[in-house]
Length: 248
Image 1 (cartoon, rainbow, N blue to C red):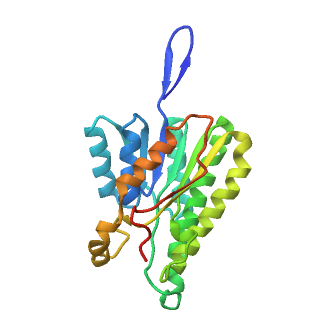
Image 2 (image 1 turned 90 degrees about the horizontal axis):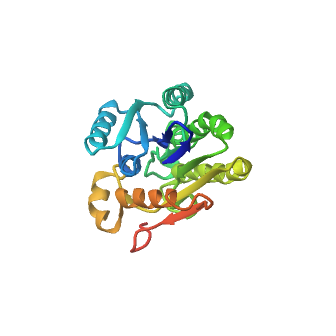
Image 3 (image 1 turned 45 degrees about the vertical axis):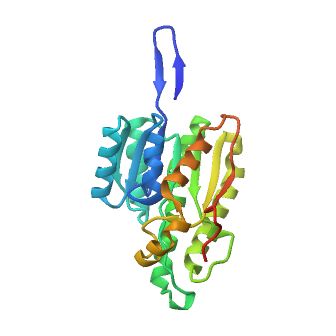
């Protein structure tokens, strides 16, 4: 936390961290990790039930959390959520975009509707969230945007064309954005996890491959470690793979 001193008092600013896609998987674990170091975590996703469960868990452990339902497929929903956070907390210091969906299908078997859904969540939703927080970060001359991408954005895996394309778009967005906001002292980090044990995987595949996968908590801990580095350092890209290597 940062401190602002005056003659009369010491004002403590508790970093406000907006975790998008926090109801499950990596996002849920990220929310808990950042809450564990005293951040004010605003957790958003579509599932109110899962978000309330997360909020209660964090508060029970002594952390600070707020659950806000947000559908990243709807730009107005993203804008309203960002505005609500800024109105209540005065700042969004860190945006962590973890929302993601996929379809384990060849391109020929993936419908245009499925491609649009994947693109809207994995890329367009991220762009909307970033655009919603950017003006306030520019004004503050600080901020951090962390995009959870995937190793599939840079390495070819069969039956992941729509997913890989959407995440490659997110990767490029982050890379370009980083150069555009350096002068405002805003950090941009792209995180590339390999196979991670989350609900994104089909149940049978997940059960079979679980011993070879990373845990969502492990990925979240790595992201927290990046955040805790010295303030004059930015990790621009970090690749995380299971110790046994890629699956597929």
